[in-house]
Image (cartoon, rainbow, N blue to C red; front, side, top):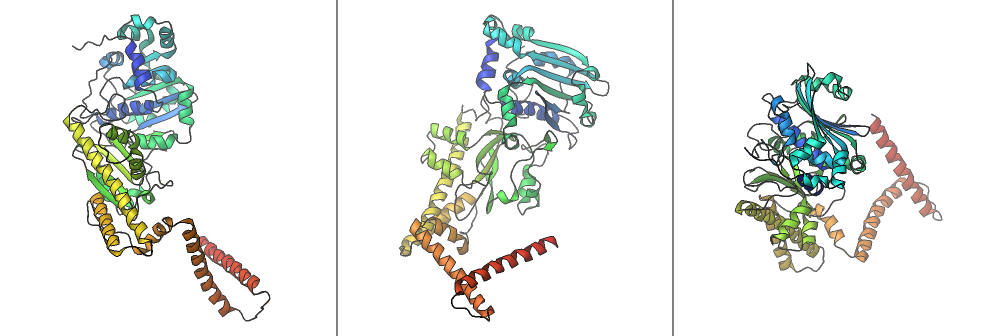
Amino acid sequence: MANYDVGASILSIITESLYDDPLVVFREYVQNSADSIYRLENYNDKCAIRIWRSGNDLFVLDNGKGIKKEQFEAEMTKIGSSSKKKQKNLGYKGIGRLSGVPYCETLIFVNINDYANGCAQTYSINGKLYDALKDSEEDVLLSFKELMAKIGKSETINLKEYEYYNQIKNYENLLKTTNAGFIVILKKIKTVLKNTIEDDDFINRLNWLLPVDFEKDLYCSDKGELFRELTSNTDDNPIRYCRIFYGDRQLFRPIKDKDIRKYLCKNNFNYAVGFHSFNGNKIAIDKDNSFSGIRIYIDNMLLCDENELLQNLDHFGLLEHTSNGQLQSVKGIGAMIYITDKVNIVANARRTFIEVTDTASLDFLRMLAEFVNIIYDTRYALSNYFSAKSKQKADEKKLVDLRQKALDSLRILAKENIELSAEQEDNTLKFESMSVAEQKRAIKKKIELSYESDLKLYLKEISDFDFENAYDNFIRWLQNKKITQLFLMDKITIK
Protein backbone atom coordinates (compact mmCIF):
# COMPACT_ATOMS: atom_id res chain seq x y z
CA MET A 1 0.00 0.00 0.00
CA ALA A 2 1.39 3.40 -0.97
CA ASN A 3 1.94 5.94 1.77
CA TYR A 4 0.19 9.25 1.12
CA ASP A 5 1.10 10.79 4.48
CA VAL A 6 3.30 13.54 3.03
CA GLY A 7 3.81 16.98 4.50
CA ALA A 8 1.03 19.55 4.32
CA SER A 9 3.35 22.00 2.59
CA ILE A 10 2.88 19.95 -0.59
CA LEU A 11 -0.49 21.66 -1.04
CA SER A 12 1.20 25.07 -1.09
CA ILE A 13 3.79 23.82 -3.58
CA ILE A 14 1.13 22.38 -5.85
CA THR A 15 -1.29 25.29 -5.82
CA GLU A 16 1.19 28.17 -5.83
CA SER A 17 4.01 26.77 -7.96
CA LEU A 18 2.45 24.31 -10.37
CA TYR A 19 -0.85 26.08 -10.89
CA ASP A 20 -0.11 29.77 -11.30
CA ASP A 21 -2.38 30.44 -14.31
CA PRO A 22 -6.12 30.67 -13.56
CA LEU A 23 -6.94 28.94 -16.86
CA VAL A 24 -5.47 25.78 -15.33
CA VAL A 25 -8.70 25.08 -13.44
CA PHE A 26 -10.50 24.52 -16.74
CA ARG A 27 -7.73 22.26 -18.01
CA GLU A 28 -7.53 20.10 -14.89
CA TYR A 29 -11.23 19.66 -14.25
CA VAL A 30 -12.10 19.13 -17.90
CA GLN A 31 -9.33 16.51 -18.06
CA ASN A 32 -10.93 14.62 -15.19
CA SER A 33 -14.39 14.97 -16.74
CA ALA A 34 -13.16 13.75 -20.14
CA ASP A 35 -11.50 10.71 -18.54
CA SER A 36 -14.75 9.88 -16.78
CA ILE A 37 -16.74 10.15 -20.02
CA TYR A 38 -14.25 8.07 -22.01
CA ARG A 39 -14.59 5.25 -19.45
CA LEU A 40 -18.28 4.87 -20.26
CA GLU A 41 -19.14 1.71 -22.17
CA ASN A 42 -21.81 3.55 -24.15
CA TYR A 43 -19.85 6.76 -24.77
CA ASN A 44 -21.69 8.76 -27.45
CA ASP A 45 -22.84 12.26 -28.41
CA LYS A 46 -25.23 12.33 -25.44
CA CYS A 47 -22.20 12.64 -23.18
CA ALA A 48 -20.96 16.16 -22.53
CA ILE A 49 -19.13 18.54 -20.23
CA ARG A 50 -20.96 21.70 -19.19
CA ILE A 51 -19.11 24.70 -17.76
CA TRP A 52 -20.98 27.75 -16.50
CA ARG A 53 -20.71 30.64 -14.12
CA SER A 54 -23.51 31.84 -11.88
CA GLY A 55 -22.70 35.01 -10.00
CA ASN A 56 -19.39 34.37 -8.27
CA ASP A 57 -19.62 30.58 -8.50
CA LEU A 58 -18.08 28.48 -11.27
CA PHE A 59 -19.32 24.99 -12.21
CA VAL A 60 -17.84 22.11 -14.24
CA LEU A 61 -20.30 19.22 -14.73
CA ASP A 62 -20.07 15.96 -16.66
CA ASN A 63 -22.30 12.91 -17.02
CA GLY A 64 -19.45 10.40 -16.89
CA LYS A 65 -19.02 7.46 -14.54
CA GLY A 66 -18.04 9.49 -11.51
CA ILE A 67 -16.28 7.73 -8.62
CA LYS A 68 -17.44 4.55 -6.88
CA LYS A 69 -19.27 5.45 -3.69
CA GLU A 70 -16.96 3.45 -1.43
CA GLN A 71 -13.83 5.02 -2.98
CA PHE A 72 -14.93 8.67 -3.05
CA GLU A 73 -13.54 9.97 0.25
CA ALA A 74 -10.22 8.14 -0.19
CA GLU A 75 -9.84 9.58 -3.70
CA MET A 76 -10.51 13.09 -2.43
CA THR A 77 -8.01 12.94 0.44
CA LYS A 78 -4.96 11.28 -1.11
CA ILE A 79 -2.17 13.06 -2.94
CA GLY A 80 0.52 12.27 -5.49
CA SER A 81 -1.05 9.07 -6.75
CA SER A 82 -3.88 8.08 -9.02
CA SER A 83 -5.67 4.98 -10.19
CA LYS A 84 -5.57 6.32 -13.74
CA LYS A 85 -3.26 4.83 -16.35
CA LYS A 86 -1.21 7.40 -18.20
CA GLN A 87 -1.57 5.51 -21.47
CA LYS A 88 -5.36 5.86 -21.35
CA ASN A 89 -6.22 8.95 -19.34
CA LEU A 90 -5.62 12.66 -19.68
CA GLY A 91 -4.66 13.21 -16.06
CA TYR A 92 -2.81 10.66 -13.96
CA LYS A 93 -0.67 12.40 -11.33
CA GLY A 94 -3.48 12.63 -8.76
CA ILE A 95 -2.95 16.29 -7.90
CA GLY A 96 -4.99 18.19 -10.52
CA ARG A 97 -8.16 18.25 -8.43
CA LEU A 98 -6.44 20.69 -6.02
CA SER A 99 -5.74 23.29 -8.72
CA GLY A 100 -8.88 25.26 -7.83
CA VAL A 101 -7.91 25.85 -4.18
CA PRO A 102 -6.11 29.21 -4.76
CA TYR A 103 -8.94 30.58 -6.91
CA CYS A 104 -12.01 30.30 -4.69
CA GLU A 105 -13.15 30.46 -1.08
CA THR A 106 -14.50 26.90 -1.11
CA LEU A 107 -13.78 24.08 -3.53
CA ILE A 108 -16.56 21.48 -3.71
CA PHE A 109 -16.69 18.09 -5.44
CA VAL A 110 -20.10 16.50 -5.99
CA ASN A 111 -20.15 12.80 -6.88
CA ILE A 112 -23.57 11.76 -8.24
CA ASN A 113 -24.11 8.05 -7.66
CA ASP A 114 -27.79 7.80 -8.62
CA TYR A 115 -29.34 10.93 -10.12
CA ALA A 116 -32.89 9.54 -10.33
CA ASN A 117 -32.98 8.93 -6.57
CA GLY A 118 -30.89 11.99 -5.61
CA CYS A 119 -28.00 9.95 -4.16
CA ALA A 120 -24.76 11.92 -4.07
CA GLN A 121 -21.66 12.68 -2.02
CA THR A 122 -19.78 15.91 -1.54
CA TYR A 123 -16.27 16.78 -0.47
CA SER A 124 -15.49 20.43 0.22
CA ILE A 125 -12.17 22.16 0.88
CA ASN A 126 -12.34 25.39 2.89
CA GLY A 127 -9.87 27.75 1.21
CA LYS A 128 -10.26 30.50 3.82
CA LEU A 129 -9.42 28.08 6.63
CA TYR A 130 -6.41 26.83 4.67
CA ASP A 131 -5.15 30.43 4.21
CA ALA A 132 -5.50 31.03 7.96
CA LEU A 133 -3.47 27.89 8.75
CA LYS A 134 -0.81 28.97 6.30
CA ASP A 135 -0.59 32.47 7.72
CA SER A 136 -0.14 31.08 11.23
CA GLU A 137 2.43 28.55 9.91
CA GLU A 138 0.46 25.86 11.70
CA ASP A 139 0.32 23.88 8.45
CA VAL A 140 4.05 23.06 8.59
CA LEU A 141 3.45 20.88 11.66
CA LEU A 142 0.81 18.80 9.88
CA SER A 143 0.92 15.91 7.46
CA PHE A 144 -1.16 16.26 4.30
CA LYS A 145 -3.72 13.84 5.70
CA GLU A 146 -4.00 15.87 8.92
CA LEU A 147 -4.33 19.08 6.94
CA MET A 148 -7.16 17.70 4.83
CA ALA A 149 -8.92 16.53 8.00
CA LYS A 150 -8.88 20.16 9.19
CA ILE A 151 -9.89 21.93 5.97
CA GLY A 152 -11.87 19.20 4.17
CA LYS A 153 -15.34 17.80 4.83
CA SER A 154 -17.05 14.74 3.33
CA GLU A 155 -20.86 14.28 3.34
CA THR A 156 -23.52 12.04 1.88
CA ILE A 157 -26.42 14.17 0.63
CA ASN A 158 -29.85 14.10 -0.94
CA LEU A 159 -29.16 15.95 -4.17
CA LYS A 160 -32.71 17.31 -4.34
CA GLU A 161 -32.17 19.11 -1.03
CA TYR A 162 -28.70 20.39 -1.92
CA GLU A 163 -28.15 24.17 -2.06
CA TYR A 164 -27.03 23.96 -5.70
CA TYR A 165 -29.80 21.62 -6.86
CA ASN A 166 -31.52 24.27 -8.99
CA GLN A 167 -28.26 24.90 -10.83
CA ILE A 168 -27.73 21.17 -11.37
CA LYS A 169 -31.35 20.57 -12.43
CA ASN A 170 -30.80 22.77 -15.50
CA TYR A 171 -28.80 19.83 -16.89
CA GLU A 172 -31.22 17.12 -15.80
CA ASN A 173 -31.60 15.68 -19.33
CA LEU A 174 -27.84 15.27 -19.56
CA LEU A 175 -27.54 13.50 -16.19
CA LYS A 176 -30.51 11.24 -16.94
CA THR A 177 -28.65 9.67 -19.88
CA THR A 178 -26.16 7.97 -17.54
CA ASN A 179 -27.90 8.50 -14.15
CA ALA A 180 -24.50 9.56 -12.83
CA GLY A 181 -22.03 12.39 -13.03
CA PHE A 182 -19.54 14.62 -11.28
CA ILE A 183 -19.51 18.33 -10.55
CA VAL A 184 -16.73 20.66 -9.44
CA ILE A 185 -17.93 23.88 -7.85
CA LEU A 186 -15.62 26.81 -7.21
CA LYS A 187 -17.63 28.80 -4.69
CA LYS A 188 -16.95 32.55 -4.54
CA ILE A 189 -14.20 32.69 -7.13
CA LYS A 190 -11.40 35.17 -6.53
CA THR A 191 -10.73 38.28 -8.59
CA VAL A 192 -7.87 36.81 -10.59
CA LEU A 193 -10.08 33.99 -11.91
CA LYS A 194 -13.01 36.34 -12.43
CA ASN A 195 -10.81 38.64 -14.55
CA THR A 196 -9.64 35.67 -16.62
CA ILE A 197 -13.24 34.65 -17.34
CA GLU A 198 -14.28 38.19 -18.20
CA ASP A 199 -11.35 38.76 -20.56
CA ASP A 200 -12.36 39.26 -24.21
CA ASP A 201 -10.08 36.40 -25.32
CA PHE A 202 -11.38 33.89 -22.75
CA ILE A 203 -13.58 31.78 -25.05
CA ASN A 204 -10.90 31.73 -27.73
CA ARG A 205 -8.36 30.46 -25.16
CA LEU A 206 -10.76 27.71 -24.07
CA ASN A 207 -11.29 26.74 -27.72
CA TRP A 208 -7.55 26.22 -28.19
CA LEU A 209 -7.02 24.62 -24.78
CA LEU A 210 -9.70 21.96 -24.36
CA PRO A 211 -10.28 18.63 -26.22
CA VAL A 212 -12.95 19.88 -28.63
CA ASP A 213 -13.97 19.11 -32.20
CA PHE A 214 -13.10 21.21 -35.26
CA GLU A 215 -15.54 23.67 -36.80
CA LYS A 216 -18.00 21.89 -39.09
CA ASP A 217 -17.04 23.82 -42.23
CA LEU A 218 -13.65 22.06 -42.22
CA TYR A 219 -15.39 18.74 -42.88
CA CYS A 220 -17.03 20.22 -45.97
CA SER A 221 -13.76 21.47 -47.45
CA ASP A 222 -11.61 19.49 -49.87
CA LYS A 223 -9.38 18.64 -46.89
CA GLY A 224 -12.26 17.19 -44.88
CA GLU A 225 -10.91 13.64 -44.83
CA LEU A 226 -7.94 14.73 -42.70
CA PHE A 227 -10.18 16.24 -40.03
CA ARG A 228 -12.51 13.23 -40.01
CA GLU A 229 -9.46 11.04 -39.44
CA LEU A 230 -8.23 13.20 -36.56
CA THR A 231 -11.60 13.29 -34.79
CA SER A 232 -12.93 9.77 -35.18
CA ASN A 233 -13.96 8.72 -31.66
CA THR A 234 -12.72 5.14 -31.84
CA ASP A 235 -10.81 3.13 -29.25
CA ASP A 236 -7.68 3.01 -31.40
CA ASN A 237 -7.63 6.74 -32.12
CA PRO A 238 -5.44 8.57 -29.55
CA ILE A 239 -6.95 11.93 -30.57
CA ARG A 240 -10.36 12.05 -28.94
CA TYR A 241 -12.65 14.94 -28.23
CA CYS A 242 -15.66 15.77 -26.05
CA ARG A 243 -18.71 17.92 -26.51
CA ILE A 244 -17.90 20.82 -24.20
CA PHE A 245 -20.10 23.85 -23.56
CA TYR A 246 -19.42 27.13 -21.82
CA GLY A 247 -22.87 28.37 -20.86
CA ASP A 248 -25.09 27.57 -23.85
CA ARG A 249 -22.23 27.84 -26.35
CA GLN A 250 -20.53 24.71 -27.65
CA LEU A 251 -16.77 25.09 -27.95
CA PHE A 252 -14.91 24.26 -31.17
CA ARG A 253 -11.30 24.53 -32.25
CA PRO A 254 -11.22 28.07 -33.70
CA ILE A 255 -10.03 27.17 -37.20
CA LYS A 256 -12.22 28.15 -40.14
CA ASP A 257 -11.85 26.88 -43.69
CA LYS A 258 -10.55 30.33 -44.67
CA ASP A 259 -7.71 29.94 -42.12
CA ILE A 260 -6.30 26.92 -43.97
CA ARG A 261 -3.50 28.09 -46.23
CA LYS A 262 -2.79 26.82 -49.75
CA TYR A 263 -1.18 23.57 -48.59
CA LEU A 264 -2.38 21.31 -45.78
CA CYS A 265 0.01 18.46 -44.97
CA LYS A 266 0.02 15.55 -42.50
CA ASN A 267 2.97 14.99 -40.17
CA ASN A 268 4.39 11.89 -38.53
CA PHE A 269 6.90 12.41 -35.73
CA ASN A 270 6.94 8.72 -34.64
CA TYR A 271 5.76 9.70 -31.15
CA ALA A 272 3.18 12.15 -32.49
CA VAL A 273 1.06 12.96 -35.51
CA GLY A 274 -0.31 16.23 -36.78
CA PHE A 275 -0.74 18.60 -39.67
CA HIS A 276 0.54 21.95 -40.85
CA SER A 277 -0.70 24.53 -43.31
CA PHE A 278 1.36 27.07 -45.25
CA ASN A 279 1.37 29.21 -48.39
CA GLY A 280 3.51 28.32 -51.38
CA ASN A 281 4.61 31.85 -52.18
CA LYS A 282 5.74 33.08 -48.77
CA ILE A 283 5.78 32.20 -45.10
CA ALA A 284 4.84 35.33 -43.20
CA ILE A 285 2.79 36.29 -40.15
CA ASP A 286 -0.87 36.97 -40.89
CA LYS A 287 -2.35 38.87 -37.95
CA ASP A 288 -5.89 38.17 -39.17
CA ASN A 289 -5.37 34.39 -39.01
CA SER A 290 -5.56 32.94 -35.49
CA PHE A 291 -4.35 29.57 -36.78
CA SER A 292 -0.67 30.44 -36.67
CA GLY A 293 2.39 29.02 -34.98
CA ILE A 294 2.75 25.50 -33.56
CA ARG A 295 0.54 24.02 -30.88
CA ILE A 296 1.39 20.71 -29.23
CA TYR A 297 -1.38 18.61 -27.67
CA ILE A 298 -1.45 15.58 -25.42
CA ASP A 299 -4.82 13.79 -25.48
CA ASN A 300 -6.12 16.73 -27.48
CA MET A 301 -5.46 19.04 -24.49
CA LEU A 302 -3.10 21.92 -25.23
CA LEU A 303 0.35 21.33 -23.77
CA CYS A 304 2.29 24.27 -25.19
CA ASP A 305 2.62 26.63 -28.15
CA GLU A 306 5.63 27.71 -30.20
CA ASN A 307 6.99 29.96 -27.42
CA GLU A 308 7.54 27.12 -24.93
CA LEU A 309 8.60 24.79 -27.75
CA LEU A 310 11.35 27.10 -29.06
CA GLN A 311 12.62 27.88 -25.56
CA ASN A 312 13.13 24.18 -24.91
CA LEU A 313 14.65 23.43 -28.30
CA ASP A 314 17.07 26.31 -27.74
CA HIS A 315 17.84 25.05 -24.22
CA PHE A 316 18.90 21.68 -25.64
CA GLY A 317 20.93 23.31 -28.42
CA LEU A 318 18.70 22.03 -31.23
CA LEU A 319 17.95 25.30 -33.03
CA GLU A 320 20.11 26.18 -36.03
CA HIS A 321 19.17 29.87 -36.09
CA THR A 322 18.30 32.68 -33.67
CA SER A 323 15.25 32.17 -31.49
CA ASN A 324 13.59 35.34 -32.78
CA GLY A 325 14.14 34.35 -36.41
CA GLN A 326 12.72 30.91 -35.73
CA LEU A 327 9.71 32.41 -33.93
CA GLN A 328 8.93 34.74 -36.85
CA SER A 329 9.15 31.75 -39.19
CA VAL A 330 6.90 29.32 -37.32
CA LYS A 331 4.27 32.02 -36.81
CA GLY A 332 4.03 32.17 -40.60
CA ILE A 333 2.41 28.72 -40.73
CA GLY A 334 -0.29 26.94 -38.75
CA ALA A 335 0.51 23.56 -37.16
CA MET A 336 -1.03 21.20 -34.61
CA ILE A 337 0.93 18.24 -33.24
CA TYR A 338 -0.72 15.49 -31.18
CA ILE A 339 1.42 13.28 -28.92
CA THR A 340 0.26 9.69 -29.43
CA ASP A 341 2.95 7.73 -27.54
CA LYS A 342 2.01 8.39 -23.91
CA VAL A 343 4.39 5.77 -22.57
CA ASN A 344 7.60 7.41 -23.79
CA ILE A 345 6.38 11.01 -24.05
CA VAL A 346 4.59 12.49 -21.04
CA ALA A 347 3.80 15.97 -19.78
CA ASN A 348 5.91 17.64 -17.11
CA ALA A 349 4.42 18.45 -13.70
CA ARG A 350 3.28 21.91 -14.81
CA ARG A 351 1.83 20.49 -18.03
CA THR A 352 3.64 23.16 -20.03
CA PHE A 353 5.98 20.85 -21.95
CA ILE A 354 7.13 17.23 -22.06
CA GLU A 355 9.37 15.57 -19.50
CA VAL A 356 12.82 15.31 -21.07
CA THR A 357 14.31 12.38 -19.21
CA ASP A 358 15.43 9.75 -21.71
CA THR A 359 16.49 9.06 -25.29
CA ALA A 360 12.89 8.80 -26.53
CA SER A 361 11.96 12.33 -25.40
CA LEU A 362 15.22 13.73 -26.82
CA ASP A 363 14.61 11.92 -30.09
CA PHE A 364 11.16 13.50 -30.24
CA LEU A 365 12.67 16.95 -29.60
CA ARG A 366 15.14 16.43 -32.44
CA MET A 367 12.29 15.69 -34.83
CA LEU A 368 10.45 18.82 -33.71
CA ALA A 369 13.66 20.83 -34.15
CA GLU A 370 14.11 19.48 -37.67
CA PHE A 371 10.55 20.57 -38.49
CA VAL A 372 11.16 24.06 -37.07
CA ASN A 373 14.45 24.40 -38.95
CA ILE A 374 12.80 23.37 -42.24
CA ILE A 375 10.16 26.08 -41.78
CA TYR A 376 12.92 28.66 -41.28
CA ASP A 377 14.87 27.46 -44.33
CA THR A 378 11.74 27.52 -46.51
CA ARG A 379 10.80 31.01 -45.39
CA TYR A 380 14.16 32.47 -46.36
CA ALA A 381 14.53 30.42 -49.55
CA LEU A 382 11.21 31.86 -50.78
CA SER A 383 12.11 35.35 -49.63
CA ASN A 384 15.51 35.28 -51.35
CA TYR A 385 14.05 33.99 -54.61
CA PHE A 386 11.21 36.52 -54.89
CA SER A 387 13.46 39.37 -53.76
CA ALA A 388 15.96 38.55 -56.53
CA LYS A 389 13.16 38.06 -59.05
CA SER A 390 11.78 41.56 -58.37
CA LYS A 391 15.06 43.16 -59.40
CA GLN A 392 15.09 43.96 -63.11
CA LYS A 393 18.72 43.00 -63.64
CA ALA A 394 18.83 39.84 -61.55
CA ASP A 395 21.53 37.39 -62.53
CA GLU A 396 19.72 34.67 -64.51
CA LYS A 397 21.84 31.76 -63.23
CA LYS A 398 21.54 32.97 -59.66
CA LEU A 399 17.77 33.27 -60.11
CA VAL A 400 17.53 29.67 -61.37
CA ASP A 401 19.55 28.47 -58.37
CA LEU A 402 17.42 30.44 -55.92
CA ARG A 403 14.23 29.15 -57.50
CA GLN A 404 15.43 25.57 -57.22
CA LYS A 405 16.39 26.06 -53.59
CA ALA A 406 12.94 27.52 -52.85
CA LEU A 407 11.28 24.57 -54.59
CA ASP A 408 13.42 22.04 -52.74
CA SER A 409 12.57 23.66 -49.39
CA LEU A 410 8.85 23.73 -50.21
CA ARG A 411 8.87 20.08 -51.18
CA ILE A 412 10.62 19.09 -47.96
CA LEU A 413 8.10 21.08 -45.91
CA ALA A 414 5.14 19.69 -47.83
CA LYS A 415 6.56 16.16 -48.17
CA GLU A 416 5.27 16.17 -51.75
CA ASN A 417 6.25 17.41 -55.20
CA ILE A 418 4.60 20.84 -55.23
CA GLU A 419 5.21 23.87 -57.43
CA LEU A 420 5.66 27.54 -56.65
CA SER A 421 2.48 29.59 -56.79
CA ALA A 422 1.33 30.96 -60.16
CA GLU A 423 3.00 34.10 -61.52
CA GLN A 424 0.03 36.33 -60.73
CA GLU A 425 0.37 35.37 -57.06
CA ASP A 426 3.93 36.69 -57.07
CA ASN A 427 2.92 40.34 -57.60
CA THR A 428 2.26 41.00 -53.93
CA LEU A 429 5.65 39.59 -52.97
CA LYS A 430 7.39 41.69 -55.63
CA PHE A 431 5.64 44.81 -54.32
CA GLU A 432 6.52 44.05 -50.67
CA SER A 433 10.20 43.66 -51.52
CA MET A 434 10.39 47.11 -53.22
CA SER A 435 11.73 50.29 -51.68
CA VAL A 436 9.23 53.05 -50.81
CA ALA A 437 10.13 54.99 -53.98
CA GLU A 438 9.65 51.87 -56.12
CA GLN A 439 6.28 51.15 -54.44
CA LYS A 440 5.09 54.71 -55.25
CA ARG A 441 6.08 54.29 -58.90
CA ALA A 442 4.27 50.94 -59.05
CA ILE A 443 1.10 52.46 -57.55
CA LYS A 444 1.31 55.39 -60.01
CA LYS A 445 1.61 53.00 -62.94
CA LYS A 446 -1.33 50.87 -61.73
CA ILE A 447 -3.57 53.95 -61.37
CA GLU A 448 -2.50 55.28 -64.79
CA LEU A 449 -3.38 51.96 -66.45
CA SER A 450 -6.76 51.89 -64.72
CA TYR A 451 -7.54 55.51 -65.64
CA GLU A 452 -6.43 54.92 -69.22
CA SER A 453 -9.01 52.14 -69.53
CA ASP A 454 -11.76 54.29 -67.98
CA LEU A 455 -10.82 57.27 -70.15
CA LYS A 456 -11.17 55.23 -73.34
CA LEU A 457 -14.65 54.11 -72.27
CA TYR A 458 -15.60 57.69 -71.31
CA LEU A 459 -14.57 59.07 -74.70
CA LYS A 460 -16.66 56.41 -76.42
CA GLU A 461 -19.77 57.32 -74.41
CA ILE A 462 -19.79 61.15 -74.45
CA SER A 463 -21.40 63.15 -77.26
CA ASP A 464 -21.13 66.70 -75.82
CA PHE A 465 -17.54 67.98 -75.70
CA ASP A 466 -16.53 70.67 -73.20
CA PHE A 467 -12.81 71.43 -73.33
CA GLU A 468 -12.76 73.86 -70.37
CA ASN A 469 -14.46 71.42 -67.95
CA ALA A 470 -13.13 68.18 -69.42
CA TYR A 471 -11.40 66.93 -66.24
CA ASP A 472 -14.33 67.75 -63.93
CA ASN A 473 -16.80 66.06 -66.30
CA PHE A 474 -14.60 62.94 -66.40
CA ILE A 475 -14.45 62.77 -62.58
CA ARG A 476 -18.25 63.16 -62.36
CA TRP A 477 -18.65 60.36 -64.91
CA LEU A 478 -16.38 58.11 -62.79
CA GLN A 479 -18.43 58.85 -59.67
CA ASN A 480 -21.72 58.08 -61.46
CA LYS A 481 -20.20 54.85 -62.80
CA LYS A 482 -19.26 53.79 -59.25
CA ILE A 483 -22.74 54.62 -57.91
CA THR A 484 -24.36 52.60 -60.72
CA GLN A 485 -22.11 49.61 -59.95
CA LEU A 486 -23.01 49.72 -56.25
CA PHE A 487 -26.73 49.97 -57.11
CA LEU A 488 -26.52 46.91 -59.37
CA MET A 489 -24.64 44.95 -56.72
CA ASP A 490 -27.33 45.79 -54.15
CA LYS A 491 -30.06 44.58 -56.53
CA ILE A 492 -28.25 41.29 -57.07
CA THR A 493 -27.82 40.81 -53.31
CA ILE A 494 -31.53 41.51 -52.65
CA LYS A 495 -32.59 39.00 -55.30
